Image (tube, rainbow, N blue to C red):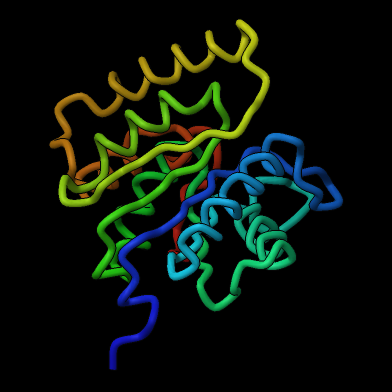
Length: 199
């Protein structure tokens, strides 16, 4: 029997930023969430996807779970929310969406990715590179700080993405996953413990 989620053709994916020790979202995460909920209201049959792992050393709660709970408070149907709990950064957001989330949404044709304005160009390039060509990727942004430090960091990060994934076939999430787990310091054990379990 096909479920409502399996019939969904559109997903609204919101990327998290940070939260504090009391699991309160910071301003960037909140702005992204508000923008994503607004877009979801325009397409209420869409799936709402939150992303982000339990990155805080003082909590076992993934930021994706906090974002999901806050989305419900803002009126999103909890039965239409999926969480991408494996993602530790923007590349992981795209890769695990392409491997874990897409597997649960066979009818999906469009994903609307929501992030901060300064983060939009990098997000757009990564998602369009990682995800299959038959998926329409649209990036929408929330207002955010855009000072030189943010922009310099974004330039360095997109250069690192291109360098780290050179030679990986575009639009093949499984190939990106293999490189991610072997070469990315957030996932291969260099900085954080290797991720071992699926969502």
